[in-house]
Length: 267
Image (cartoon, rainbow, N blue to C red; front, side):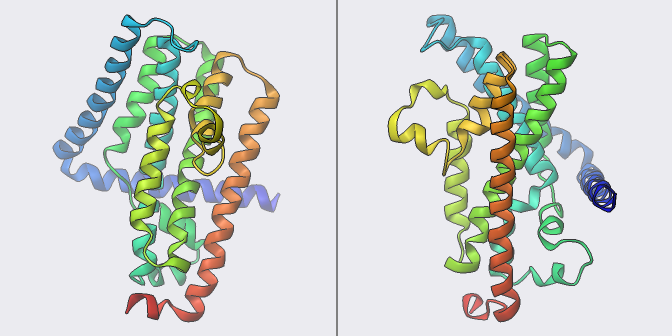
């Protein structure tokens, strides 16, 4: 029961921070709405590109327009939740190197969680709006599929967040890895929005390991097309293992940070 209460308290803590961050960004309401709308239209433009492509080539490696809609909807919604709720995760490398992590060490909540939810990206809500809107408007899902879409989006959000934490946590050991994180995160986003069947061999293996685009888009696509418990279990298992790897790497680096405070790296 204490584990359940702790979990509920953590979710409430995340929710309060998310609302507070959203309220802070909405102090400049016009600017916030412009950013959200710009991102929404940008996503729509990419979807229109793929729609135009499939109008010319209706079937490519078994892929159709509906598959691309699902691919983009899941990826965009998961990415939006990641940068909207855990928006500070992308700044984690800089926070580590600058010594700004000190401000979180004395706080009662878990350091990594507190750092990640301390900021939000206003444009992320445009991605969330696009993801859910595109899936509902173009595919007309029933209640079960909407619920499944929400669950899969949460998985994608956690995978994106864990990916950011892993590459940012390397700053504990390698110095500033912000550039590496930006390139790798960009690669993950790009590969997640392309049909998986155009890749094969070593690249396909890469997309299910180091750059887990397959778990971000391809497996959720398969589950929304034809649900299977073993595939859902594989996605959940990977999300848990990948998340545990991110937390473990951060904790390992944090022990070095607390003992030496990275003075040499900051100098």
